[in-house]
Image 1 (cartoon, rainbow, N blue to C red):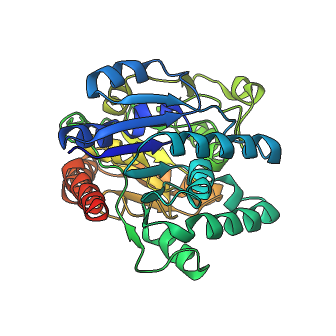
Image 2 (tube, helix red, strand yellow):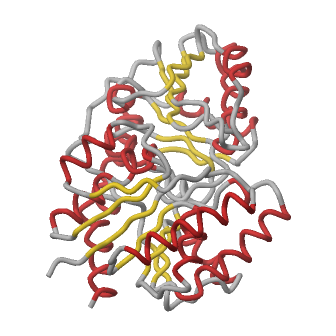
Length: 372
């Protein structure tokens, strides 16, 4: 008899952009899957629902709200829903579902897997909130069957804080990349036309402010260099950039193109992909870029450094504009044949470690083991 799985995430966009291959693998294995999200702003979720034959459950909440009352209402609604419906396994992604769904499940005892896709803004900025979030994780994960991390650093941190143990935690490198969709696209590098690409949410934690400042320095001396910034302002995130900031920094050399439904074309047309994030779970943008065969510049932080080494790009210091400018200049001045070698190494690295067939096999193994 097919097992019933329910997946919780904080947005429809998160499911569409980051979990579709996971849902596809679950569907191919014959699981009955329900996806619970707080909204359906990304309408592609309905096409995905039809294609992969999963159920959709909308349990509303505000993903960045700190209101005790609103979060308590969400917890009660989760408890009622889980108690009413027959599920063999819960899988949670993102911070609020990880904490609140797990807390509700303390009283139900359904088997549960938590996936830490990143530690979030609270771990980077506000000390008091960080202490509270750690405390909530410790309580919520008390009965978790397995906590999956996307990088070893996050796992070590949670073990050190005694939130998880070595026995009930595991590292699985991201959600995997469909290397057939993000296939290798050869690039003819041209020193007279060099385009860098950033893609992601327009929030400060992604290093956007440092990125813009660095490129203002770079483009003064290198008129043939451009930066394309793809992504939307995330107004519910406390670290979000403002419309005023974006308008102020638009120029002939720094282009903001908004949300792109076809990131492959942007990556194909770029010479180097860049991300100056303060911390990641495991950057999907960098994985997609590497799969297509682009050299990468990123910060030497968890979730980025796993994808990049000296053979396929450069690592720079987080929040350090001078070091970022230095690494960008290094790439600009490389000979074309070295850039070609970096391009090939990026693709090889993804095929070796991050292909979705490799990653999903690990996920399915853990799910089967818990359900048995």
